[in-house]
Image (cartoon, rainbow, N blue to C red; front, side, top):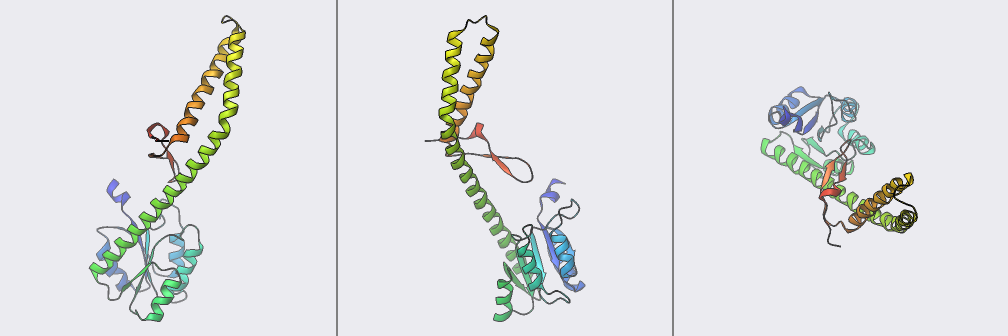
Length: 230
């Protein structure tokens, strides 16, 4: 069950049922398959966020289709923030320079020739998905690095006011007796500020970290498992 859920979802877009059957037969053992028989249907499926029809991880797109050809479909996909990063592999019988130029200019990631060769198809899909995963990891790392730099700057700015609060808290503790009801409250304030100070110092020293899954496919830095050399 989990293995099935984790499989990549490929959207096949072709107006010819025989072509669809060939692709489904090759891919169905390794991937989850969605099918669209027109450009309009492909765009609807690709931008869907429902549980029953999640956005595809890759699109196999026929070029020659009525009403809306593959070039137009790909251009629209690239304009939509939900689908602009989804790899599009064109499936075409024409591999002349003009056809391929239009395919790549419209936003295609790669192409596969018709009649489809099983080994070539699987290799190009694997390559496109690997490239997507690598790109996502690099973007995530850059994002987290930026977050760490910002966190370091914020911690630096917070350090002085926290030191002031800690110092004044200590002065108050020294000025009142321990049997005073306010003593415990002030003591708690000082302890919490001290805890905040330790967290900010740790944040400023982080150079290696691990992440935790958060919400909606986002990740956060696991401070408890982070280490630093600074």
